[in-house]
Amino acid sequence: MRRLLAQARENIVQTISVFIVAMLVIWGAVAPEQMIRTTGGIMDFFIAEFGWFYVVATALFIIFCLYLGIGSYRQMKLGKKDDEPEYNYLEWIGMLFAAGMGVGLVFWGTAEPLSHFAEPPPGTQPKTKTAAEQSLLYSVFHWGIHPWAIYSVVALALAFAKFRKDLPGLISSTFYPLIGSNIYRWPGKVIDISAVLATTVGIATPLGLSAMQFGVGMEHIFGLPNNNVTQLAIIGIVTVLFLISAVTGVSKGMKYLSVTNLIIAALLLAAVMISGPTIYLVEHISRRLGQYGSSLFEMSFDTAPYSEGNEWMNNWTLFYWAWLIS
Image (cartoon, rainbow, N blue to C red; front, side):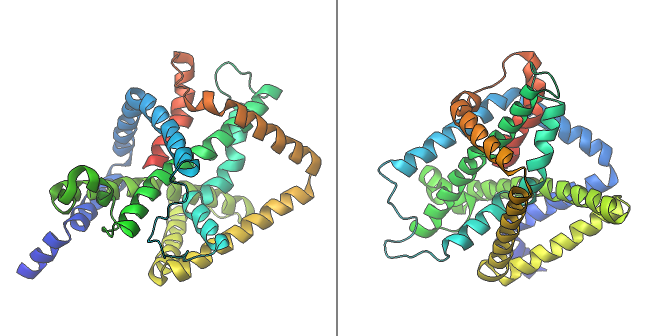
């Protein structure tokens, strides 16, 4: 018993995190409607009161990343001076997209423009040419530079602390310049527990959405019932595959899965471009890139201060930024 207690104290972050996550899972299983109301209310409160903060923060993340990319630090290595890249470019970009976007980009790359076309931002008539242009613009905006800037700030801080300063690979290590050796004490433990919970909730979102999306696809193609049992089975299979890739390590399972994903995505893109209408698609890509570039600054700082724009922005842009940060 003493040994178990000693191990629990030593792994206090894991112990408390597992306990809280287990309580959340039990809550969701026993009283799902109550959980939906409660968590939805908390989310609505934070978006309503701190939506401006999410907008400003993500915009500042982009500015900070641009400064690091083109400023005086652009040649600095995140590792030691004599370190060399562990993966080639294809492997690195494959793991980057698999971890950063995954199934979300494939599904919402189609679903989001269609949704915005039917229900565009306030001031735009649904199912019109303007709605079509706005739908594609906002979809590129939500899946463009902003998510990668959010990821990069955390990733850079972790990589610098881990590989340059030889600190533990934990979120608390990024706070070393602020709290010093307290990262090894309770302040650091609280930070790491918060990070575990935020990451768990953040991962649960795409996992749940992808299970529902996959279930609809299976129902449409094979006629299988899309119910809770089917979705739980999908989540179970995905979890097993993830555990296998995690156990085999980044250099094997995760790398091979990520490169395979990248190749399949490239084949899907090629199939769409070849099947056409190719010229129409190329013209749209050019048009949207120009529109995105010219509107990026204004959209990045838009907080929709007028009431008629708040609800749409809360449901999409602010939800995305909060989700991506977690």
